Length: 251
Image (cartoon, rainbow, N blue to C red; front, side, top):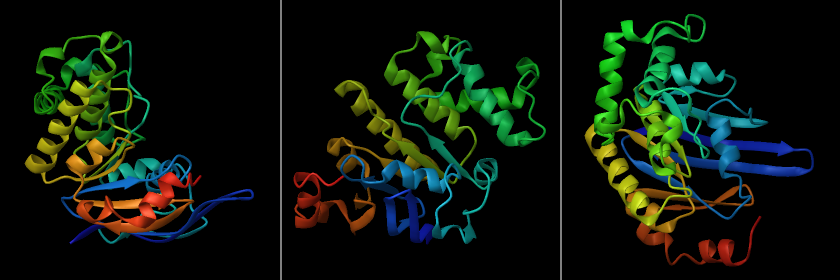
């Protein structure tokens, strides 16, 4: 069964055709990687999925519902969460508080959510946040201030902030960017565990091929705004089109 079906998505910025008739299919419960050279349109495509950008044409069907034209909060309520390339966390709050806030926002909706509501009274939300942090191996950091965390832990914290919203689809933009090899390998293990234990569908944009081939069930290669190949990982490595896209310096 397909979780996400993208057909004929186009996006132009002035004279630049950022996305050109993009098609891809993401199977439910799978990890799907989108790779490609810098400037290929990967982040632009993710922004179209979450409502930050509106394509000029095409459809993005999520479990039979077209996401295009919907507001970001509506897409989130439909079950799509995104983890950004640069961690977007509340530095002056604890790790637990950081995870509780998106859980409350998801539960209450954009018009009812009150960021100043006393968090200590939200016992159910607190437990849900703790459960997610435990799932990510961060139970010993619950009371730590977010500002004092390492870059790797901040990335995992933002993953927790996405997961606590109980998404059906989790979008990860460069989840291991700037991490040490040890943190990267730990993140691979965490994401694999999340995928297996939750049956969660994930889309990953990633430049580190070690991460891509360790995690992805299927890979789409984007070059100059077009998907040039979509195939299983074992068929991507030696694909001539993929090698030309990278070695040829496609932008």
